[in-house]
Amino acid sequence: MEVTSVLLFLLTAFAPSGRALLDSIAYRNRAKGVAEILRAQRAVDRPRFDTEQGRRQGTVRD
Image 1 (spheres, rainbow, N blue to C red):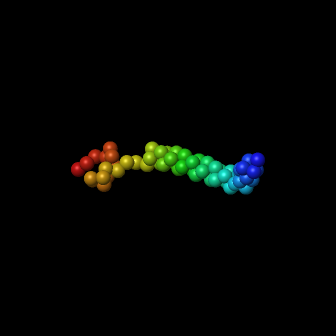
Image 2: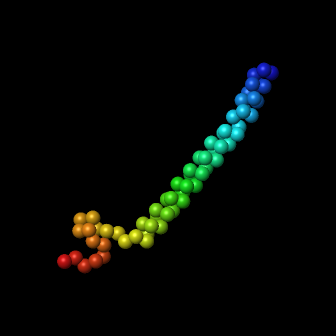
Image 3: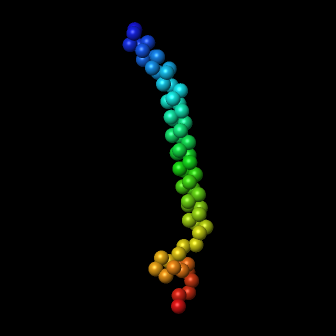
């Protein structure tokens, strides 16, 4: 019975901090997802550059 009461005490003592940890992890995962979506949208909107010539792709080269 003493072991059970100690376990229940520890569970109630660490439950709020465990919940905060899970909320923090969820927040970071959502932020990663939003950042990935923004990166993908910017990659589509941004013109690509040719790294060798320093020009936009699709332009006429001299």
